[in-house]
Image (cartoon, rainbow, N blue to C red):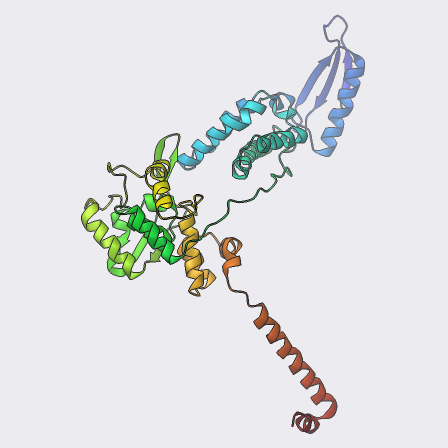
Length: 379
């Protein structure tokens, strides 16, 4: 139990002495007895609720804590770490850097999220910034610096996703014809192989098993602060895809005439032989080809991956096969994204349910009247 001592002659004469939940004796001094009384009550109430935290720890600022938090993330991909640091610098620390951990409350976080959205930052960017702050403060709770995480329960309002565009096979041909080699084969690989841009840019000669019409998708190229990074795929998994014969032949010709013979040589590079950068490719090649082919201005490179899904669905491919081909983490991702493209079976289902009820009525009549009467009725 906390008790109060009066120490005359001291600058803060009223001292509260108490034991923390670990049994360690602590003390805090106050100028006025009323403040000491209030603190004494709060300390005991916090201990009873299991909400006591070391005041010295909770005075740590968010900026100070962010450095310690980052050190616990050293095992992550370089791109992920760069993203965390970028989010801290651009979105988290400008608002919360000077806050003591204990002063970051739910309302401050709600207002911060609203400000980020009002600034024009996209849904994904706001969600990532929130995730960084949430992870930091979650660790602070686990380490005993905070009682609760004020980010918990704060939602990021969903914004409309960019509209997916799907090309027909004929439109893919027009685009490939307009873009020409050495990148026409890249267009076909995106549209018929369904690879992500980073997976395509990271594809190496040794991954092309063309005698078996197969490509191993094992790496992904990304960019962070101007640097090219090679890492695992988005789902951290390697997958093997079977390519159609025409694409196999195009890749074989491309490898024979345009790719270095070293096993680690990149299949697609810039005209200068450097790894492909998405922004440069879009500016120097993509936009011109899209316009020349008479395709929508908003067509993104990623829409070729969507095109692959739509072409597979049109040919009756099973959702599980599409999931594996595209490298989705689960079939629910595939259905959430492309479920609306699958043909509706509503009429067939309704007909089937009619048949179920008709059978039930026939069984009921047979039970009541006997099989002979049912047979006579049927005649």
